[in-house]
Image (cartoon, rainbow, N blue to C red):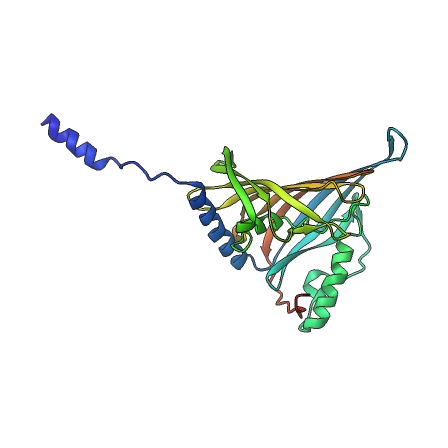
Length: 284
């Protein structure tokens, strides 16, 4: 009888699970990002953004010449343009003071003219950076930017290695380090020099979901030296069916300037306006 019970329990208990390797987890994450970018569409939410900048003088050794801080409250739009996404910020308040409205709300900014919408998009990109502190030009602070590393077309250009595990918002994840090693760099400096990407991905191994990303950029040979770091965490939203950015911290350093920022996001929801763009052919 005892032997029969032991055999029964052995039958009911699950057998050993097949080990999940790095390639399998990366394949799941690539599939996740492909589906994610398909489902992302256009999203609009609220951004609370605080920036701090330090400007050094050119003395030897350099000394702090100026410190600044700025708080902004904005409508934040993630909008699809062809196969890419752009981030637009419509600033409503700066340091608690309401900004005089110079442009229409996002709902009224676009119409059915693809060419006019493309021009308007470029104008709004400039306006989005109007209140950026420091002299470090930055247009990569789209929270979802680092997900590009996991695109099927990009994965072969990167080296990946597992770097332990971590729990993100109650979810057990693998920490996977990446390093860009070939091909055209994802990011270039304003002068055109490549800024090579390294960083970390926090991936749920069973599903491929990405819970957190860290992207680091550096090229010491760019004039003045330049490096940046962006850390983004994702969470759920009541009105979105996918994980959405919850918080982003960033840091940029050049020879004389350091800029740090933190953006907290809330109330992400679908942007229902149908926007059409005239997409220019890629330059040779």
